[in-house]
Length: 224
Ligand code: C5P
Image 1 (tube, rainbow, N blue to C red):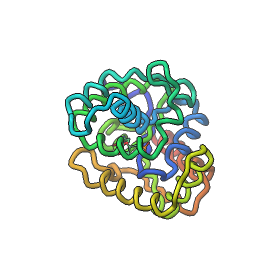
Image 2 (cartoon, rainbow, N blue to C red):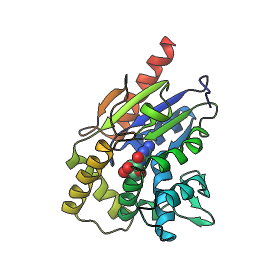
Image 3 (cartoon, rainbow, N blue to C red):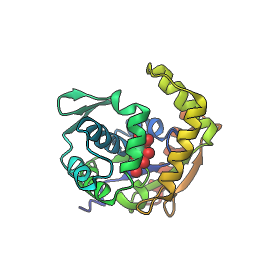
């Protein structure tokens, strides 16, 4: 499905880089729709855990992904009749998501769902492969990153705020492992898309990052 007239801002980057917060705020500012593609992998992972599907059963996992009974309402996420907004943020779910995201059939099963988020007046999509695979002709591509230490600190605060327990050393180890898995996988590896603007937010506030993305978008629109 090609809908080139509907603008897309693709924001990719590693786990806990702050891209979710930045993408969500940019979408709000522009009145655009928002796709948190990681949530789709997390929902598939949660569904697999709930249905006790083995992480080696690629076919069953792809079937789960294809028929994911998910619904997004504001910042709330539903799986069938259950509000799973907090549940999908647990570290176990994130780690499982990262493992099943390496499976080509699972990625393929989620493509249509992601493309469907491209609706007027525009979309801000965040993930790992928004600019490289899902929306290769995005209006603006941003690769948002931060040092592993800055990301571990952010993730630590997020987890504590949400009432989960967290340990800094474990988080650093998990992030490094997840980075390696996301970057080294054969299909849709995490890497800056061609023509992407690189934004290192290690020493930036979320507001500063949002401003920068909006400036880049304004510049692209001016030259369109
Ligand atoms: O972004 P988030 O941490 O919520 O994503 C969870 C996992 O889903 C990531 O570790 C990554 O492996 C996977 N993912 C992906 N492609 C995307 C979004 C997320 O492979 N577009």
